[in-house]
Length: 581
Image (tube, rainbow, N blue to C red; front, side, top):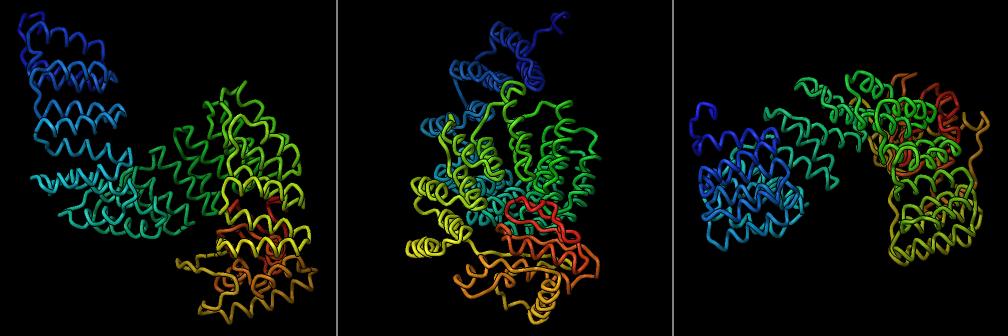
């Protein structure tokens, strides 16, 4: 066109600037800008807006701002371009300031304006500003706009106001994928995983096809709940909608299967991926770690290092895997090589894993010394990891010292009181333990109740300590009685420390713990020889761990138990953790 000496007009410039924006061709865009000035189209509002959009998409917000301020007249389109430029370049605060200026200059907002502003509010978690914007929308002709409604729903969900999000969602004439995904994610973030799963099923019934974002969110929910039935249903939908090749979805499938106790299925997904990204490697590495498969984790890490650049998350996962399997030397070696060899800076997360690794291995003094030498301010999880190690190794003196450190940072930390009391219990110091428990109760600090669940025939059954509510409780108690007799004959001796503790806390022996009830129910409700998958929200106690080994041998069953920290695979009287957890 230039060679033919045909003069460009506003349409030409807008089309070429759009092409530059789409391909992030900044230098070509500047050349076009020079011609815009030469041909005197710089004052044209639409060409100016295209210039702003081009510069913003090419990452030059400074140039976009200069164009905006040089425009003699700015209408809604140019204001939208500038506000959108700020949002696209992660300058959400500037976007909100511009919107306020737009209001003061009485420039009319349209649906594009509101979409950009609501996106900025969602990212900043600016609920008050988002609510103010909602008020403006309700007074405008865009109150029923489809896209604005979806963004309102997303903004409220991101800001944690799920009631308002649901109100907007329910008032929408039709709900699209964005609004469904937003409301689903909102419930998930607030810990309402069951509601999130129900919403996903309703979304499918409404005929709304999921995308990668939706599947990643719902698979994370399935992983959190260890909901294997729902997870497999989501996997089918992933295949149905052609999202199985998406690396984030595949990585989420690996996480879901790993956390549901199906490490073999996680491996199957991993091995079927055509391209292995860092996220996928990390997900598989984490799966091996939580299942206590340290050797597999180290082998995978060696292979991973040949194909991708490992990052900070890789080393957190790797050090955690070493901690779960007692690979102290290997973990320490990787920690020392992180910065000089792999160019990964050490963070609080890495130090926390190292303290846990050293503590579990019995190197309590080294662990405490590492905390004291940290460049970062030690956080509560690091001290709690060491306090847990004091319980395992019976170091009362250090346990008391660490507990004081934690309570200085958080006087209302109920878990600290519980762990310290367990330190005393492990050492047989019942007088001190009673004092700590009394102090916790006086301060109205409540520990989390233990809960274990098992899925049988697609239905989840939950149990608490000394539970009497289950409809088959009489059969469960009879099964426990039979198991108790068989276990004693096989040589099982209850741990007296836990018998004393349990009598002290409510009169129930460890044979009435929630995991034992769930195992007994599983035995009477599933075919002989089939594998049982049990999930608990807290750490399995030592006595129940020992009992599970005996039960696996007596019943001829494989028991896969996930507690708060990791998986235990009990087969023929042996646990995969090697009694190291």
